[in-house]
Image (cartoon, rainbow, N blue to C red; front, side, top):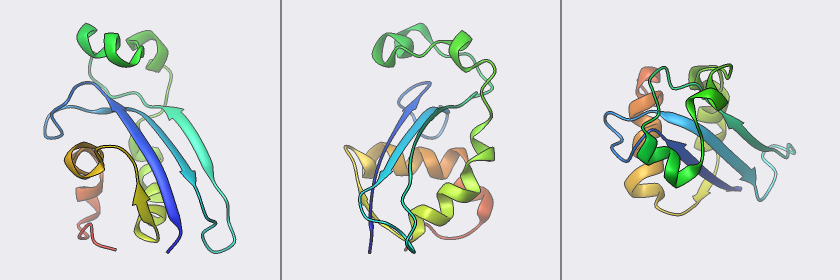
Length: 112
């Protein structure tokens, strides 16, 4: 499978209650001949706590005019299912927050 490296920043560290505010990904190998690399801010729809801003530097003002993650979720969902994944703390944070924030809306298991 192609390799997808990604990282998520959020409003906090609890995947069940916090929201995504930034996503970055890079396809290390093309998928179906397509190469992709993106980094974008996301409006979480809730305030970003100051202690979270101290970690990643992203403020409410920075995400105010950004789209919600649901605009990117269908594409990212299809991409992630075709790839092996690479990233720091994916199992404990990034995958669970993706699932809680958006992917469970698809009602499809998060298995490749």
